[in-house]
Length: 353
Ligand SMILES: Cc1cc2nc3c(=O)[nH]c(=O)nc-3n(C[C@H](O)[C@H](O)[C@H](O)COP(=O)(O)O)c2cc1C
Image 1 (cartoon, helix red, strand yellow):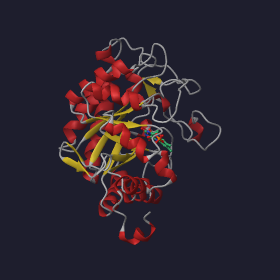
Image 2 (tube, helix red, strand yellow):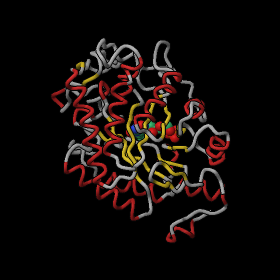
Image 3 (cartoon, helix red, strand yellow):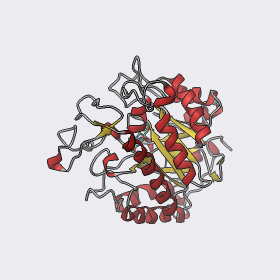
């Protein structure tokens, strides 16, 4: 049996394989109420039926102001909790395992979804709001955010805790804290976006404080469910967040209760990134070398490539995003390719090749 399709145990949960679906925003809560609907149900259940060991939801905002766009999904109220409960139930009925990515967009909130024009911040007249951030430093091209007060920082931690409790009630198997891609927790981590001089800014211990408080809060509500933390391994920018910082903070996150570090990169400032096949795998390898359980993501598009990432000890699991949008059955195809057989649904067996 391939490594990719061997099971992995994270805390109290066994995942049937190590090929997972990365979080992907759908920007499709058309009513602007953060309630996931039929699109999300079909999208996530198709991915689960496609054979992945774990399907992660899109970034689900822990508060209204934490949404990237007005159409983002959320997990802060009863209607959202009920809608997620229905989706989780369907994924479970299909034999899948599903995690929620808990997120706060910080200074990158209140922006237009990718296919709406013009790009950039949504004005108040169109339902936008003032974004909050560690410091009043705008992401280039976006409106200037308001710096969070110390009281408001504490509220962010409470919002993550409450969203975790809702997620657990909705039946999610796994929780992921989104601390990558230049969203709020990454904004606190990076000196490029955090210029505070209080207990949440300055030295690494201070910049990491909000993330660690959030991980502890999520851990406390998560029971024995695995808690993953998505980090950007680097800002790809001189003077920014580095892979060395990532390795140190990953260890602190584990002490705070994280079970796996999901290593991505970038997003906090515009940067030139030399993308290519598996371009973020070395970052995951550095985190794993620091003693952490880690997953790799980013332009992993072939079965053999994914298997090699695991065989070379550079990650414990692999995530795919765009390949799974192209074909939600990608995990079944890859399993068939690597192991000669795959658990195709009986209804689809005649298509197995
Ligand atoms: C449509 C789309 C939406 C995404 N939304 C999220 C998101 O909500 N949270 C996140 O952490 N990453 C998000 N990403 C990044 C993916 O999780 C993944 O890291 C990235 O696409 C690289 O993997 P790939 O080369 O397999 O696509 C998104 C990517 C795509 C294509």
